[in-house]
Image (cartoon, rainbow, N blue to C red; front, top):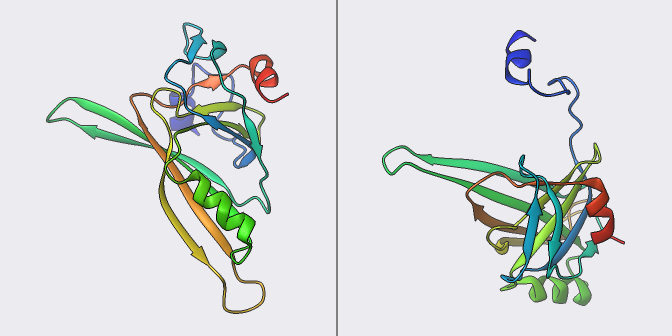
Length: 172
């Protein structure tokens, strides 16, 4: 892995030590009054005016988080599209449908714990909002029956990490 070693020479982990997936997701309402305390490296270590986070129950490992860089050389701009996809299982269940409706139009922040026990904060600079939905009842037994929600924000940087100690206070 010569190229990989060049890319991550300043980091303690190599490209071969990647664990994908989301272990936990917590959502809260976005508040413009929230201030996040960060280290010089950009890791979130505290905050004031932070609303209560509520855990979203992940079922069947079906949620994902992505960040996509949009670079415009003509205008010298860089934006990062943060996308969090969550799945609400039970397409015909009124509770599930109401939960999806409640999220439409909401502005949120997401605290994401990855499978390798790292924490990310999506929507910290600009709020996450539901940007796409689709629901399906399935045709045959075993097919997907639920509602996919894509919750997105546009940021100027990749999502900051959160110290494990601070994340523990937000998720208690």
